[in-house]
Length: 305
Image 1 (cartoon, rainbow, N blue to C red):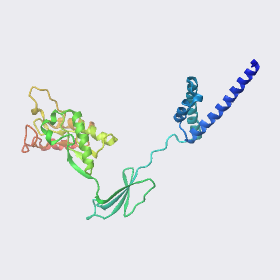
Image 2 (image 1 turned 90 degrees about the vertical axis):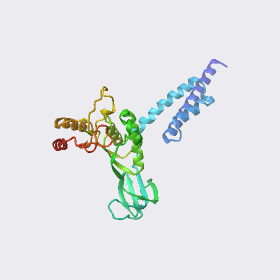
Image 3 (image 1 turned 135 degrees about the horizontal axis):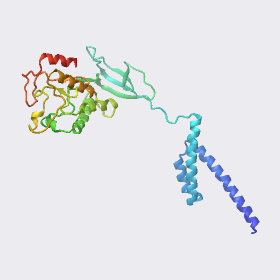
Image 4 (image 1 turned 135 degrees about the vertical axis):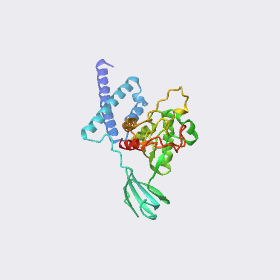
């Protein structure tokens, strides 16, 4: 075949391939934009096709797919298309066989409760059921308000009471996470923690903040980090260790000025209320309930912070 004929045939083939590739990319763009085919699916299909099987063609295809992806994203932004839909509002309808609201003298009977984003929005014999809401069938159960426990120690266990002072803050935090989940599962939505037995840490304050941020599942916590105590009083754990062992506690206060200092420290570190031992106690090593280590004057000063 003459060279001129070969050149003409080569130009014809190249032109034909160019037209075919142009049509191909128009098809890819339409399929990706419509959602009928992902870029990954198109790439996999092409790379296994004999027509596009060479390494160089694969590289060229992948490069053009990347460029196409960027173009699709940019064109979507230019059109004002949302990049991601906002999260839907959480809506739950509780169908209760019986309800006691904590105010009435008797149960109210069957009721429905509409909950939006964790808050009660409506209650009645029937309530609105928005599209897509989750319906929880409690028709064989009684629904009540959340319980409040005013005296818990979430970082302590009765079986470990003798060794509680020897546990590291991390160990007690793990115990606290477990206790908070159990309390919530039992219907307690608020608890008041009456101090952590800790020489110097603020484990319960950390747990309270973790629950507030949603990092730990549990009831709302109101915490007093430590029991403010006199030396040798209900909150003094130093007699549990050898006399020559250095042991500094941040909750011990003897006299008005020290009480002020300790209370201010407790508040600054996150305590939401103050607990103090006006008398001795049962579980402490060096006192008894009959002892009254704080006089009335320090107690009054204590209440003023």
